[in-house]
Amino acid sequence: MYSPFPATALASPNFQIEVLAQENIGDCACGPCAIFNAFQFGSESLNTLASALPGEVPADKVRSLINIYGKKPSVRSRNQPRYLADAGMWEDDMAPFINDWLKNTGHAAPVTGERVTIQGNETAQEHLHRVYSELSRSLAAGFPPVVNLQSYTARKNLFHHYWKWMDGHFVTVVAVQDSLPADASKFSMWVADSQTGRILQVSVDADQSRSPSASARSPTQRSGKAPVQIASDYPYLKIQSPKLEDILEGNAAKSQQTICVIEYIAHR
Image (cartoon, rainbow, N blue to C red; front, side, top):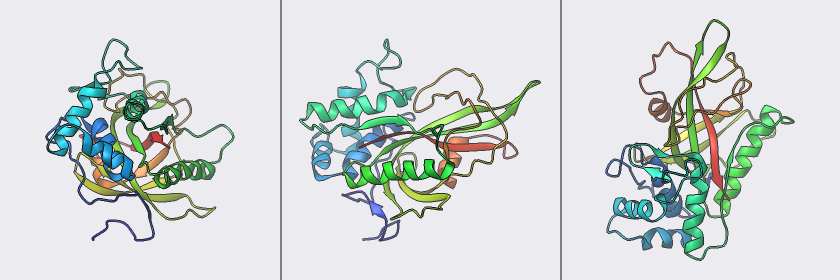
């Protein structure tokens, strides 16, 4: 079978070429689709849960998933459901959504959701290794991690430079490179992307040569589209992937300085 990543890569337990695409579900359905992709690419028990959802085809099963777990109250917006068709999901609702599904079907091992910011005592390389370890451990445990990617553009006013939030997108990590040298400044991962319906290669970079030093205070949105206030430069790992960067940067002028980062991971 053709594989889009090296045979030596640490891959999801049940690798499948076909990725669920969101085109027949909704423009903002990347969150539920990323969850479904994690289950269909994961361990046998997760495959069984995905297959058991009501519906004849994967898109119908995701609609069922949304009806069962997406209508529960959001931890971020208590007066709203976790998923809105015209706004998507908050990253804070990702782990509770997944864990409700696991708990209600008798699976005791929950997932953990966290923002993967650099810690005060970490170097850039230590940050890179920590995130790589979390991704690889989760894959080994049978749960392909769901990650939230964010994009920002550099802006300035009379007083300072800052990063202004642009967009966000959920994807599912189905493989990472097989090892990470101690002096590495980047690593490769492969993600199931519901926007393109493909597996895409992504370079994750610890380079923190940055200039703007704060993020803009703009209205919050969903579908992974929650602008995070960046206190000092940007505390996240950068990503490079042409297709994903096009999705995240949208209509931003090519002359603008933009960054795309890993902001959140739901993992085991």
